[in-house]
Amino acid sequence: MGFANLARGSSVTITASGEANADVAATKAVDGKMLNSKWCQVSNTPQAKWLSINLGEQKTINRWVVKHAGSALEHPRYNTKNFKLEKSDDGVNFTEVDLVTGNTDSVTNRTLSTSVTAQYFRLYITTPSQDADNNARIYEFELYNGPVAATNVALGKRAFTAGISAEGEGPEKAVNGTVNDVHDKWCADTSSLNNNWICVDLGKTYDISRWVVKHAGAGGESADYNTRN
Image (cartoon, rainbow, N blue to C red; front, side, top):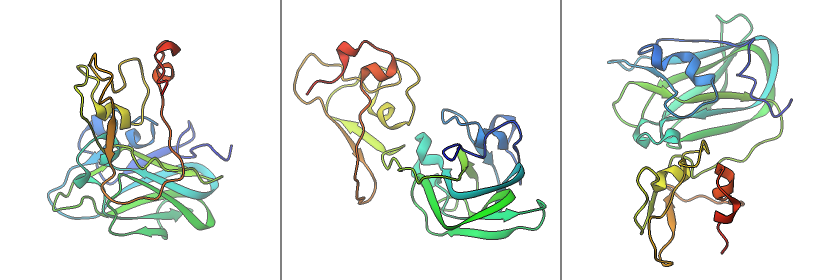
């Protein structure tokens, strides 16, 4: 159970400082989906915004994850810039657990120096974007207690290719974090054996220790189409 996202489940409830409409309700931030599923609060002023999760009982966490706008292929300028994780035993009085400032990444994956236990955890946002946009956009807010998972630094980043992609199967499909069906992929629409490549702009320099490619068979196509060389 240590690998489970504690922010999901029938005993969990979530509230927010506001919601633009029912299509971007707070519950969308804990539904485990990325495609067209986010919490959004629209505001003309820079007041703080928050998402609060009630786990239903006291639970211990050692890691938290926030998937910002860029992780779902929105413009990275909408990624949350300044925010923090807070905890509470009563859902009213919160104390700071971890602080993030100057973030530009599309996915925040933070391991705590010391595990914390509480019933309520709150994502408290003070600067919701990289510029003067005051709207908050959060695709997923996740809580974990277990081994540290790797972060996919290519998720939601700008991808491009020299070739022509098949209609609806552009390079952005290869970095959207989902494998929903046979069309949720990048496909080079060409009869040539040359220039079949895809490139991802990570936006800044990263050290990586692992790389993963999910071929045709992962999306339900015949394994005959899996990349060979």
